[in-house]
Image 1 (cartoon, one colour):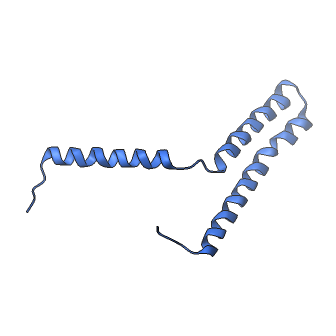
Image 2 (cartoon, helix red, strand yellow):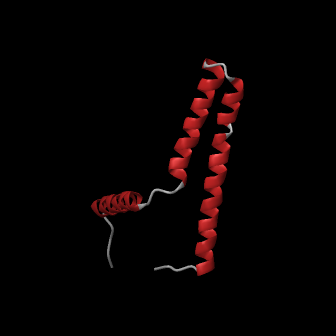
Length: 92
């Protein structure tokens, strides 16, 4: 029978934290991350056009890019997940 001491607990906690950090580093960049940045930039550019340049029509037009980009990214992510489900789930 094995007893757990404080040093054993701290080692297991640090190992689990290391495993979590390693898993985060291996996580690939999803297709939504660059799209989110582009959407945020389009909102900022929209505000610039609307308020500073006082071109309300162009500001509104550019402001509509953000939901369009985010919607398209969500569609393609769901399409990718659906394709994986069609192939079947593997746990390898």
